[in-house]
Amino acid sequence: MVFSGQKRNDALLGGIVIGLAGGAAGSYMAEGAIFSAIFTIAGALIGGFLGVVVAAFGGKKFLLSIVAGACLGAALAVFLGGIEEAILGAATGGTIGGFSGVMAGAIRK
Image (cartoon, rainbow, N blue to C red; front, side, top):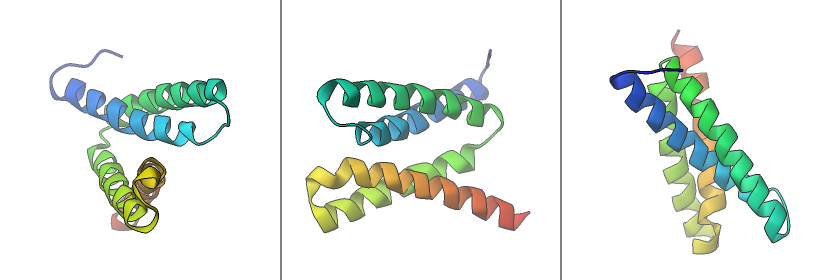
């Protein structure tokens, strides 16, 4: 896909946001250093690709709901479980934020 101007910035933002969420979620999916690294990289790559695709279709509000969910999820995880739970809280919060953004968009239409 070739983007220009604002679409390129949106695609970069989408790839980073969903790639980080995918990498964070992937880091909790396997035990052992090698499998954890593989799942983290795979989650980041798949998430980054999906983020670029979502941004190509104009999903800026969807991406913002993921960022808001990740921030709130990380804050809640730190409050409840300590700093070591921040990554898991951000990953699950981003997922819930994305689902909430999709549902809010479906209700509005």
